Amino acid sequence: MNKDKIKNVVVVGGGTAGWMTSSLLAKVLGKTLNITLIESDKIGIVGVGEATIPPIVNFNSAIGIDEKEFIKATQGTIKLGIEFNNWNKEGDSYMHAFGSIGKKFPFCDFHHFWQKAQQLENGSNNIDSNSFWDYSLNYQAAKQSKFAPVNNIPNTNLPGLAYAYHFDAGLYAKFLRQHAQGMGVKRIEGMITQVNQHHDTGFIESVQLEDGTSVKGDLFVDCTGLAALLIEKTLSTGYDDWSHWLPCNRAMAVPCERTENTEPYTRSTAHKVGWQWRIPLQHRTGNGLVYSDKHMSDEEAKEVLLNNLDGKPLAEPKVVPYKTGRRRKQWNKNVVCIGLASGFFEPLESTNIHLIQTAAIRLVKFFPHNGINIEEINEFNRQSKIESEGIRDFIILHYKLNSRGDSEFWRACQRMDVPESLINKIQLFNKTGKVFCNPDDLFTEIAWQQVMIGQGIVPKDHHPLVDTLTTEQVNDLMNNLTTLINRTVEKLPRHDEFLTSI
Ligand SMILES: Cc1cc2nc3c(=O)[nH]c(=O)nc-3n(C[C@H](O)[C@H](O)[C@H](O)COP(=O)(O)OP(=O)(O)OC[C@H]3O[C@@H](n4cnc5c(N)ncnc54)[C@H](O)[C@@H]3O)c2cc1C
Image (cartoon, rainbow, N blue to C red):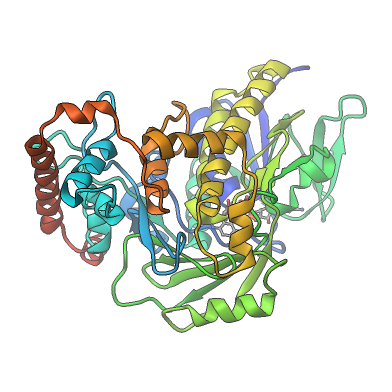
């Protein structure tokens, strides 16, 4: 395709995507590459995106970030899971808690044992779904607002707390910028007004700034956010629109004053149309409403959002229109798009920053040596597609499984056709209690089980292995687990104490 050695990488965009990507490139390949990042203060960054999932802990450590410095600099807090309120019916609540639940068994998952224990207790299939989270260390710590790093439940081989972070998006971009510049990334401030392509191949040769400066590159990383300046406006790569499955197309964000207690979890509350996030930070709480403009006007959205804050708003609500979906090729010619330029999922499961991280890692893994090869591009794109489609199905699951009858918005979600891959998963779980994921899937069996149980599925059967245990053994297993979990949580400091200590 192009046999020139890749030496000059130009990252266009200085939001979370631009700085995370350039940090990783600098850390791993900085000795052999010149990395330049261009950003425009006039345009600014999207400035939202404040909740993450556990793999970010390893990413930060891989790029050499000190956790304490990072939490301090970004007004960060700990996140142990996402609480979903009113998603099945009004008044319901469950959590997608990170980490494990119960105990890992080699041939069948823990929830089969839990379901049997519930049946024994109630003498029927009328199980109390909420009791599933009695066996989640993350859930119990989250609801009691407690946290300290715990690798294992003491004196057992049961895993400890899995955690991620909440942080201020603006402060995170600033923090990463300093970090990346410290590793040799060159920053240029200015707005790109022209993109120059090779007349035969269409490869991008240079970008030109408002002041006439031209920046040449061998490989360009498009991190220009929703503008998608290189990948779409220049290369017309195309977009797979998934809004027929994920009907919301607008978000309205507003920060408000913090509450006294800093809960270590994100909250997602379903409303008549769409849902509202709540992200507790040290200095404020981040909030936003995700809705569909076919079912709700911006004025109505503003009223719903402002009526459901638990502190005084600190700014005017900001609207971000979007289209759910993904760029058809994440790598096209000599442009790799990362972040919002590559597509968008609503922040229901906090997956966008994670996708930045996996795309940056994939770029390093597939980094071209002597020129750009189509084989590398194709494999990179194949892996990105599989990853996004797995996440897409998991997010659709939340909408599809609702039992709310209070608006046409939710009833349409119940009726909608969903991807076959998702139907198969729901039906298998419903009939047998089994869930299978691909080894590379972001959301594992435990995540799927929590959302399906939380949104009302009681599997009609359990695994036969469970019946090899006596009633007494099943009850002992359950009692031992709750004792261990409760004892561990009892000894944890409060989340606020942990934050103060760093
Ligand atoms: C409402 C909302 C809530 C979200 N919540 C979450 C969440 O909780 N968790 C999560 O993981 N993700 C979330 N996301 C996604 C997350 O915000 C983004 O993935 C993340 O901020 C990355 O953005 P970005 O860097 O791609 O784009 P941006 O932050 O928009 O950065 C774009 C950059 O490109 C530059 N640029 C653009 N055009 C030009 C030009 N012509 N010349 C020079 N520079 C240019 C801009 O100056 C800017 O620096 C949310 C997104 C939205 C919209």
